[in-house]
Length: 342
Image 1 (cartoon, rainbow, N blue to C red):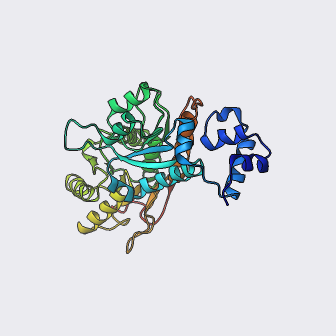
Image 2: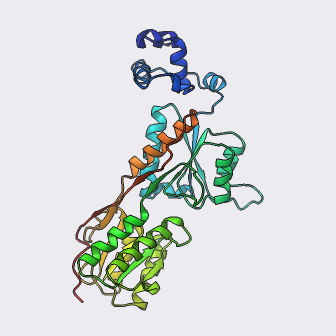
């Protein structure tokens, strides 16, 4: 059976204009939250689907939201898949579609990155940027053109661009301190890349924990794995070669932690008997044939939900919170961590 706005209004006991505002996500500040929920429940109960073309003409919206990743292969990586899942859930409940776009620039110059084309051609109503590979100048241009944009696990110093953040400094501080509290002193930090703000912040947390414990910072105990398994494997080998006395290692994500685990084993060493290991994101707690992996747990799906909710508020004309939402990582200790034995 085909239903109309009039049918929904009657069942929800509201006006047709209220139904229109909810369906088109327009002027929602004029509709109470309980009323919105009641209208959406009736829409769901009736399995009502609005005419997309008519809806776009009325609202002057595309009802598409861009989500920017480095490249499409990243979506298979658990960090991004969990965040995108959280974003998608909120968008779907509010009648929006998700459009994945790439941050990398196409080889054919002078074309702009596809996420900028989506903005320039008005193909999307807003954008969640998940990666630091999206050029800083582009992101600032979006914001200064009053285009709705939310950054996830990224911020640009000096700019008040809406963002949802992980407390990366506190996360690495807690991970490093956990090893120090067990008696470790030669602790390595395997970052993604120090050009990224998130790893600059994590390095600061690493240094803070060392300083508090009276342990001198040694740059040779830091490496870059670029969030890629093969590069992290090589970087771990370089760290072991420079400093064979390492008893603890913190990696900036779990993929790199697994690479480090394999490289440590290939060097004839064991985890945690010789080297304790901590990852970040808590995505792979039970690697096959290995000790369970200690990690810094982050509510990635919730981060995605928060980012999407924040973005839709901006899209619908509401002001975002003055301060970003910040999620603090929690240390989850498992078998890969122990007291030093050498």
